[in-house]
Image 1 (cartoon, one colour):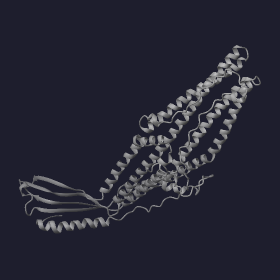
Image 2: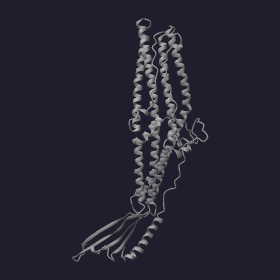
Image 3: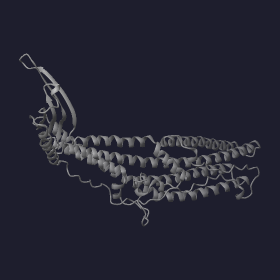
Image 4: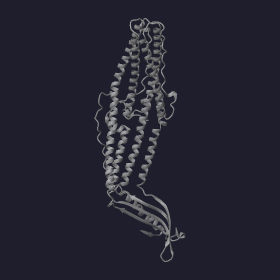
Length: 497
């Protein structure tokens, strides 16, 4: 429909009626076919299994403890901060937020008309031997879909949920990064201790091998004692090479996590070990026997956090909130698929000046507008809309299963960490008793051998058993510390500043 009017009439009445039409269309577009969202019932028990540490009155939950408060060592805190700045995986997760935010803004812009400046010219034969010319300049609104049935609004809600999910994914990535840096740093600290222990053990066994050779050359011992001493020395040297490799692997892992070579001043300080004492004279008492000792364990640097209830995980763990936002997005897509069964109403309009000659543009009487609404009701689409609705329903069911799996995984991770907290302490205490008993056994075996009461095989066996026990003690201590990190991560902590 086209009509030429005088400029005052067009600018006053027609523009106001067009604005009222657009407002009415926006009001009518409030209809939505998005199913009502209800959070699925968590498929887990109301309590975590097994004994749990007693909660301290007023103590915050694990998710409310910032990582700077959880980590007590200043060097490790600085290293974590460096990783949060330079880690590439976290950087990708942050950039994903910007990408998904832009997609959401595109969907939101679809609800509004796009108005541009349009200019056109058309020349064609008029059938009488002449040429007809039409020129126009003005504002144009092209194919704006009036969202009567909420299709575009549903797509916008789905894009918003995806944007919120990307934010939760970034927080989950930060939680994982904090835990990974802390666990790797603790592993490096333990491997430093084991490396120092192994180097001390190699020195002790080298001394034992030297004495065995002297006794064998003097005819005081058999070749069996000598070969046994050689075997234990070679085993210690093999362990030394293994510990050096494990330490190098920890450094490589930290380099990847931090995004650069970790500064030396932020790494764990290697422990100092006393030099092995050469046994040149036969001791007469057990206190005179030099026993290989393990380095003193580092002080605890991690804060204890209460576990809380499984229901807390639904609102505190970022990965669960991410899965829920993805479920909300899939639910909103169903509304868009339902709306596709109803008429799609679009509007094309323009307002400006038109004339049969370029010189006639912008003159009185050349102003006008066009308004061309269109409604398209799908009648036959070969089942496309129905298939799209079925796919949207299936996507929602998949998202429900993924959400429930995320809840179950979180429940299992917390339960595993609580099981470790309940048992690793007892295991560590028992191994400390065993290490003291093995140290006493070595002293007594060495004393008995030096006084000719026992064979050298007893000494070597006691030495081997002591080294194995000391290694296991250090590994258990590491497992206990890393279990604290895993519990903190499983509770959803680590990303709050």
